Length: 499
Image (cartoon, rainbow, N blue to C red):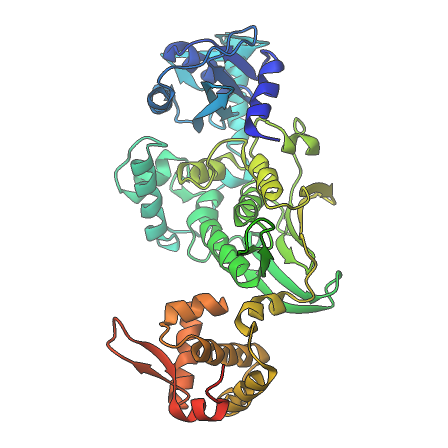
């Protein structure tokens, strides 16, 4: 469903405890409403729409979008995750302001605590304030805020923390802070009373699995069959949340086979991944951010089959959200609000409550079936379905390399590399043969270009290229900046000049 239709459906719901419609931009009024949402279960304000649902639009929406977000960040205490986005309904621009329920209640605006009572935002009563404080006390004993025992500052990655601070300061998503690491951690509740929190270790730990073994993520690729008769890769990722996300993205690039299709209206071939990478990234983000880490037996996994891909995480949906809601415009209720807050500030979460919609839309745009979310055995599973069934993931990787190459040349390449590949694993043998073939077919390539063509890490390619050079099968010609790799004379003679 297109975003415009989602916004129209949202407006038609009318005002409620979690939705407010505002005809014009009045910063103070919007801030009071957002403060009330933060002290409740989150909500949305649609600006440019009357309380009767008539779209009147917002003039100069681009400028106001930035100003309003900055106003809300600077004037609501404590700092809260707020997204302000421009949307279009017909030919009118409107603003959509979203927050999830705050984890550091009570929230204050202009010296007052506001509360959402039905569809009205009102000053909180003394009883309601007492309840908010009690809720805050309960939240403070949540797993992510508990102290991580034996963890010191030097167990965290200072470069990752400073990168996060720099991103926040440059993006304007949060209040600007100095590059003092302890100040940053303290400000966001990741360091309290002389202890690092579990969330701090999960987000920034150098070796988080030493302290939180359940942070590991399994990434498995099944070479054939639907039930995993064989693995072409089976890894346990043990980095912090940001490192695991990067590693998973690299593994996707390595293992998600390309497909080649001819456009029916143009004689051109288009190449792309079997699944939209943007959708996979959102799926992984959701799994790692909303995962229940409190159970040491809880797991998270990414399983790649020939005809589908599954992302699973331990945990349950909040009671207020049903599986069907994930395909509609909904309020986000993160299981780990401190972790979600840092991911939001760092830009890993672009717009609150939009991630699942982006997954569905990306799959539709790629011509795939809608993905399916399912809940089973205290876990949530997201399944993507491939447009075409491939016999082997590894075969898909090499298809573009061997296309147009005769069986005779392939056999000769295998024979030439026999001495180099003696005693190594099948995977390494395959990569060395592919490197030689790529250089044979595309002379003058540099290592980054070779790595891109065979879908392998650059460090591994450097090592295999050295082995081929040492065996005098390839050689580097030209200046360091402009030169590249060529098949050496003895290898070229054995393979033959014809390609």
